[in-house]
Amino acid sequence: MEKKYELSINQINDILDTLRNRFEKNPQRHKDLDWEAVQSRLEINSAKLWSLVEMERTGGEPDVIGLDAHTGEFLFCDCSSETPAGRRNVCYDRAALDARKEHKPATSALDMAETMGIELLTEVQYRQLQLLGEFDTKTSSWVKTPAEVRQRGGALFMDRRYGMVFLYHNGADSYYGVRGFRGLLRV
Image 1 (cartoon, rainbow, N blue to C red):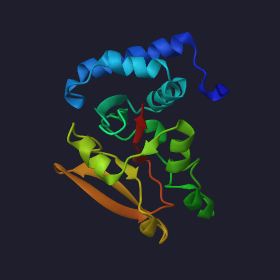
Image 2 (tube, rainbow, N blue to C red):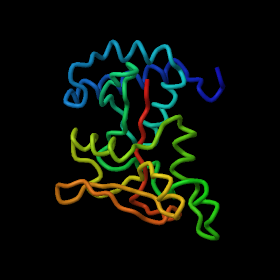
Image 3 (cartoon, rainbow, N blue to C red):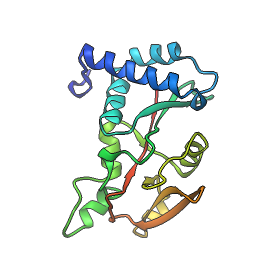
Protein backbone atom coordinates (compact mmCIF):
# COMPACT_ATOMS: atom_id res chain seq x y z
CA MET A 1 0.00 0.00 0.00
CA GLU A 2 1.28 3.44 -0.89
CA LYS A 3 2.00 5.67 2.09
CA LYS A 4 -0.41 8.42 0.96
CA TYR A 5 -3.35 6.03 1.43
CA GLU A 6 -2.51 5.11 5.02
CA LEU A 7 -5.17 6.11 7.50
CA SER A 8 -5.17 5.69 11.26
CA ILE A 9 -7.84 3.56 12.92
CA ASN A 10 -9.38 6.79 14.26
CA GLN A 11 -9.52 8.31 10.76
CA ILE A 12 -11.14 5.15 9.38
CA ASN A 13 -13.72 5.05 12.15
CA ASP A 14 -14.42 8.78 11.82
CA ILE A 15 -15.01 8.67 8.07
CA LEU A 16 -17.14 5.53 8.29
CA ASP A 17 -19.26 7.12 11.05
CA THR A 18 -19.63 10.34 9.05
CA LEU A 19 -20.60 8.47 5.88
CA ARG A 20 -23.04 6.18 7.71
CA ASN A 21 -24.75 9.15 9.40
CA ARG A 22 -25.05 11.01 6.09
CA PHE A 23 -26.32 7.84 4.37
CA GLU A 24 -29.02 7.40 7.01
CA LYS A 25 -30.07 11.09 6.94
CA ASN A 26 -30.45 11.19 3.13
CA PRO A 27 -32.24 7.98 2.01
CA GLN A 28 -33.65 9.71 -1.09
CA ARG A 29 -30.13 9.70 -2.57
CA HIS A 30 -29.73 5.91 -2.49
CA LYS A 31 -33.07 4.12 -2.48
CA ASP A 32 -32.86 0.35 -2.06
CA LEU A 33 -29.16 0.42 -1.09
CA ASP A 34 -27.89 -1.06 2.16
CA TRP A 35 -25.23 0.65 4.31
CA GLU A 36 -23.69 -2.66 5.42
CA ALA A 37 -22.92 -3.56 1.79
CA VAL A 38 -21.37 -0.13 1.24
CA GLN A 39 -19.29 -0.35 4.41
CA SER A 40 -18.05 -3.86 3.55
CA ARG A 41 -16.79 -2.58 0.22
CA LEU A 42 -15.13 0.43 1.85
CA GLU A 43 -13.38 -1.58 4.56
CA ILE A 44 -11.40 -3.59 2.00
CA ASN A 45 -10.26 -0.59 -0.03
CA SER A 46 -8.02 1.85 1.83
CA ALA A 47 -7.34 3.96 -1.28
CA LYS A 48 -11.06 4.65 -1.70
CA LEU A 49 -11.42 5.44 2.00
CA TRP A 50 -8.50 7.85 1.70
CA SER A 51 -10.23 9.55 -1.27
CA LEU A 52 -13.41 9.90 0.79
CA VAL A 53 -11.42 11.45 3.63
CA GLU A 54 -10.05 13.98 1.11
CA MET A 55 -13.51 14.66 -0.28
CA GLU A 56 -14.75 15.30 3.27
CA ARG A 57 -11.69 17.37 4.26
CA THR A 58 -12.22 19.72 1.31
CA GLY A 59 -15.91 20.24 2.11
CA GLY A 60 -17.55 17.87 -0.34
CA GLU A 61 -19.80 15.98 2.07
CA PRO A 62 -19.65 12.78 -0.02
CA ASP A 63 -22.62 10.42 -0.05
CA VAL A 64 -23.73 7.37 -1.99
CA ILE A 65 -25.89 8.45 -4.92
CA GLY A 66 -26.33 5.13 -6.67
CA LEU A 67 -25.02 1.80 -7.84
CA ASP A 68 -23.47 1.17 -11.26
CA ALA A 69 -25.57 -1.71 -12.60
CA HIS A 70 -22.79 -2.85 -14.95
CA THR A 71 -19.87 -2.92 -12.50
CA GLY A 72 -21.63 -3.24 -9.15
CA GLU A 73 -19.70 -0.22 -7.86
CA PHE A 74 -21.26 2.17 -5.38
CA LEU A 75 -21.14 5.78 -6.60
CA PHE A 76 -20.12 8.46 -4.13
CA CYS A 77 -20.54 12.11 -5.06
CA ASP A 78 -19.97 15.45 -3.36
CA CYS A 79 -23.37 16.40 -1.94
CA SER A 80 -22.49 19.68 -0.23
CA SER A 81 -25.12 22.29 -0.99
CA GLU A 82 -22.52 24.50 -2.70
CA THR A 83 -19.39 23.50 -4.60
CA PRO A 84 -16.83 22.28 -2.02
CA ALA A 85 -15.16 25.26 -0.36
CA GLY A 86 -11.75 23.58 -0.27
CA ARG A 87 -11.77 23.13 -4.05
CA ARG A 88 -12.60 26.63 -5.28
CA ASN A 89 -10.37 29.18 -6.99
CA VAL A 90 -8.97 26.62 -9.43
CA CYS A 91 -8.72 26.79 -13.19
CA TYR A 92 -9.78 23.78 -15.28
CA ASP A 93 -6.58 21.83 -16.04
CA ARG A 94 -2.77 21.86 -16.01
CA ALA A 95 -2.50 23.30 -19.53
CA ALA A 96 -4.68 26.25 -18.49
CA LEU A 97 -2.67 26.73 -15.31
CA ASP A 98 0.63 26.65 -17.20
CA ALA A 99 -0.69 29.11 -19.79
CA ARG A 100 -1.40 31.79 -17.18
CA LYS A 101 1.40 34.32 -17.04
CA GLU A 102 0.38 35.96 -13.76
CA HIS A 103 -2.11 35.59 -10.92
CA LYS A 104 -2.01 31.82 -11.16
CA PRO A 105 -4.28 29.80 -8.88
CA ALA A 106 -2.63 27.20 -6.66
CA THR A 107 -3.75 24.28 -8.83
CA SER A 108 -6.33 23.10 -11.34
CA ALA A 109 -9.54 21.12 -10.93
CA LEU A 110 -8.24 18.13 -12.91
CA ASP A 111 -4.91 18.06 -11.03
CA MET A 112 -6.66 18.25 -7.68
CA ALA A 113 -9.18 15.54 -8.63
CA GLU A 114 -6.39 13.24 -9.79
CA THR A 115 -4.46 13.79 -6.56
CA MET A 116 -7.61 12.96 -4.59
CA GLY A 117 -8.34 9.85 -6.67
CA ILE A 118 -11.72 11.12 -7.91
CA GLU A 119 -13.24 12.18 -11.24
CA LEU A 120 -14.94 15.43 -12.22
CA LEU A 121 -18.63 14.98 -12.91
CA THR A 122 -19.80 14.88 -16.51
CA GLU A 123 -22.70 17.05 -17.63
CA VAL A 124 -25.02 14.03 -17.42
CA GLN A 125 -23.82 13.10 -13.92
CA TYR A 126 -24.22 16.70 -12.76
CA ARG A 127 -27.80 16.79 -14.04
CA GLN A 128 -28.51 13.45 -12.32
CA LEU A 129 -27.14 14.83 -9.05
CA GLN A 130 -29.49 17.80 -9.36
CA LEU A 131 -32.43 15.37 -9.37
CA LEU A 132 -31.48 14.45 -5.78
CA GLY A 133 -31.56 18.00 -4.42
CA GLU A 134 -30.71 21.60 -5.19
CA PHE A 135 -26.96 22.09 -5.49
CA ASP A 136 -24.83 25.09 -6.52
CA THR A 137 -27.52 27.75 -6.17
CA LYS A 138 -24.85 30.34 -5.28
CA THR A 139 -21.70 28.70 -6.70
CA SER A 140 -20.74 26.75 -9.82
CA SER A 141 -18.75 23.62 -10.61
CA TRP A 142 -16.39 22.71 -13.44
CA VAL A 143 -17.52 19.57 -15.31
CA LYS A 144 -15.64 17.26 -17.69
CA THR A 145 -15.15 19.15 -20.91
CA PRO A 146 -15.19 17.56 -24.37
CA ALA A 147 -11.81 17.58 -26.12
CA GLU A 148 -13.12 19.71 -29.01
CA VAL A 149 -14.10 22.48 -26.57
CA ARG A 150 -10.90 22.19 -24.56
CA GLN A 151 -8.70 22.32 -27.70
CA ARG A 152 -10.19 25.74 -28.42
CA GLY A 153 -9.26 27.05 -24.97
CA GLY A 154 -12.63 26.61 -23.31
CA ALA A 155 -14.01 24.57 -20.44
CA LEU A 156 -17.52 23.89 -19.16
CA PHE A 157 -19.12 24.57 -15.80
CA MET A 158 -22.62 24.21 -14.40
CA ASP A 159 -24.88 25.57 -11.69
CA ARG A 160 -28.51 25.80 -10.63
CA ARG A 161 -30.36 29.11 -10.89
CA TYR A 162 -34.05 30.00 -11.09
CA GLY A 163 -35.00 26.36 -10.49
CA MET A 164 -33.09 25.17 -13.58
CA VAL A 165 -29.69 23.60 -14.22
CA PHE A 166 -27.46 25.54 -16.62
CA LEU A 167 -24.36 24.59 -18.63
CA TYR A 168 -21.91 27.40 -19.48
CA HIS A 169 -18.49 27.91 -21.00
CA ASN A 170 -15.51 29.96 -19.93
CA GLY A 171 -11.82 30.14 -20.68
CA ALA A 172 -10.17 27.10 -19.07
CA ASP A 173 -7.66 29.39 -17.38
CA SER A 174 -10.34 31.36 -15.52
CA TYR A 175 -10.92 30.85 -11.82
CA TYR A 176 -13.30 32.37 -9.31
CA GLY A 177 -13.95 32.26 -5.59
CA VAL A 178 -17.36 30.71 -6.22
CA ARG A 179 -16.29 28.09 -8.77
CA GLY A 180 -14.84 24.74 -7.86
CA PHE A 181 -15.64 21.17 -8.78
CA ARG A 182 -17.62 18.19 -7.58
CA GLY A 183 -16.16 14.72 -7.66
CA LEU A 184 -17.33 11.18 -8.27
CA LEU A 185 -15.76 8.12 -6.67
CA ARG A 186 -16.51 4.54 -7.65
CA VAL A 187 -16.19 1.98 -4.85
